[in-house]
Length: 252
Image 1 (tube, rainbow, N blue to C red):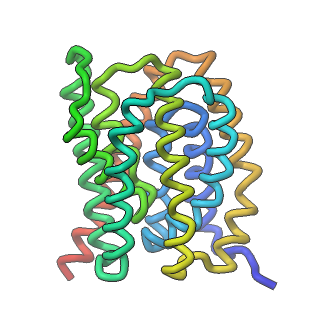
Image 2: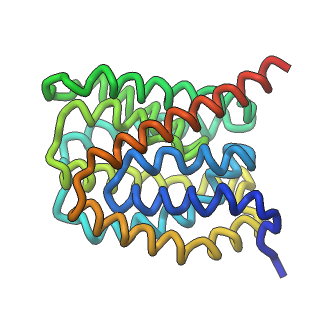
Image 3: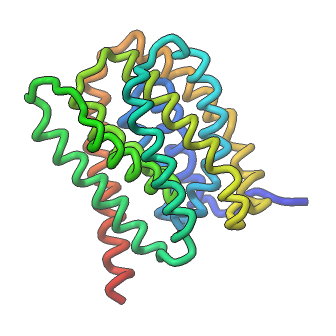
């Protein structure tokens, strides 16, 4: 019989990560970016991404129903083809890119994203360009495949457009639901779904669903400013830790 991952240290990072994912899928997108980096402090990044995938897909199904009427077709048409190309590149290079290199990449994206948001916070809304959307879609697909870290590149392109809150949430939901569904076959092919990880994912589902429903409620009832400020600080700290951890490993 397959058993759960036994180490309490794993759950010390996994349970907060799943709570963040649930709030993210409920609507607070900035919070979820920190989830896989948290788990990746314990597991190799690609293995962490595979462990979290069943949780993500369950949360996607809930959020797709809740936000089924709120989404922007233009952004999806631009970004999803790029995301597919980025995921294909990640699949081809997954066995050749070291865990530390992935940590450095995702850490850099996270730190750069926070810096970008600081610079953009007073900028006027601007329409996204097709070329830029395809590029950031590809980066999002690549980093999402490697480490479920596709949120920052996606947000770098979409957030400056200042979409209505629910439209932004719905567009984000559909984009990553498609990406997550496309990961299932490649993750199996790469041997990332171990029995222990899958059983552990199932054990985390009740926490994931509760957090998802809490996120849906909060996004409709609570001003988002404080939540995003906390998310950006958390993202910066964890991304910086990953960057330091990865850079130290690369240098050895």
